[in-house]
Length: 251
Image (cartoon, rainbow, N blue to C red; front, side, top):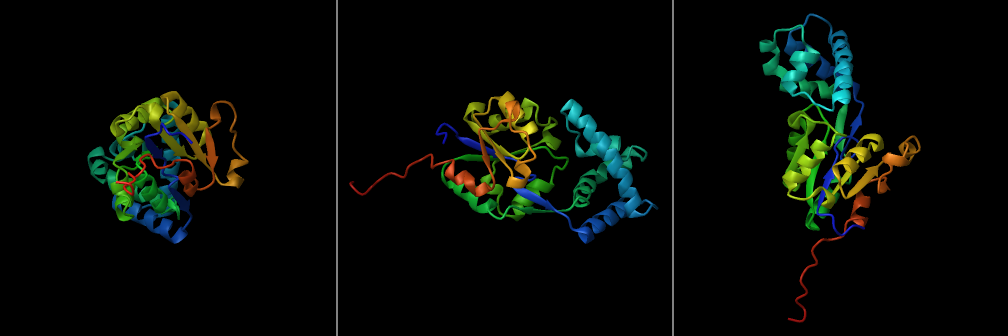
């Protein structure tokens, strides 16, 4: 246990939330995208082209460690053949729907209980995530009653820098008002999250993976975290209360 940790930042994808395939849900999103853009192509073929363009964008993002804003994503990468003044106002909704074409996202079953308890124990909590969306995560936090527990939310789509670059980690620590050495990060990707956290000088790096996934990962060298957990509730055994309630029994 590290008693010097003051802030705990948590990734979203495969950490706080999981992605579940739901074809009717995904098909509806594809249809909504096609309708919004006004294409005469079938929703399926149109979204297949978007997927190919998204792969090109992702390659650029991985190489540069930059993240485009929603407007840049759609006007430069996803729909460069359409008038920017037509697409730019639709960018937020298009991103929201495009994420839905990948599946339905649900919070981990123990997420809220763990978040509430860590907050009660005196930790500053934050979200630190690579994502193309600007409103989906804040909306989810609000809908699930978690917004109040995450005063710091740093998304690459808004900040402009991606993990594993150190800039996004430094920004999260700065916003939370703590030095990187007093911050912990909980995420799921050893090759990205461990290296990035170390480079930024974070005090603790925790990787969360199910046992079957853990067997596929390399956790050696620069990919070696401080701890490995299988579910969020294990965090409660790692981070004790920071403030001991005052004993008034003898006063």
